[in-house]
Length: 288
Image 1 (cartoon, rainbow, N blue to C red):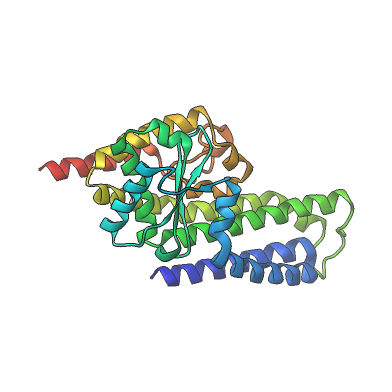
Image 2 (image 1 turned 90 degrees about the vertical axis):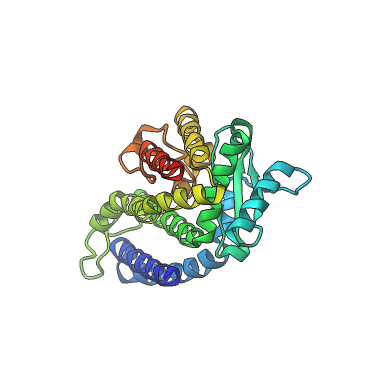
């Protein structure tokens, strides 16, 4: 099922990219978009995890450098019956985390230094269990592909702006389908389309990863407590690397840009309070 979803996502994003290319540059733009789509399809499958880790300055760490972090990840990976993922740390005071990788055999978990400092052991375990649930459910490839395509679509919109500024597009290109109107439309619509892609991929998967993480850690309230701290921390201090790369915001356990007003129009995550309520309900059922 995940293989089918990945194929459908790649196909849909390719078609969208072709449409954007034709709207901006006519038939020539569509050919360029086709070449770009082929490169992105190849690169996003094989290299999207490395690109995302690099965007956020994530640094691979050894067990000697982070023994507690490694111990928690190893124990949870064994419970999830998946290989031990690579462990990364992002130097940021904002508490957050994400997982990436094309499959469980090539997965990585990244946590910010702020997360490690802020969370107690139960909360840290809940966050890491959430991320390993994404790995176990093979959500990470689809999320990374969506981030790559969203970034490419936004890049094309920026290129259209430059082309208009320097007079690189014609306004009378009706036969070709490009020109001024197409470029203006794409400058407005392309970033919205990129955000909608993130919404489609992210929101339902977060609920599933919360439930899976609560089961892995056997402690729904640990994750619920962590989500409260995460929400407050990201409201107070939005994550700078995510602000520089907003197409990756949906990868994180909570929206790293939630403190910025413009992100509230299109939130890449379900409401944190609703997530907490679901975890509390799980805890109640466990006690009964």
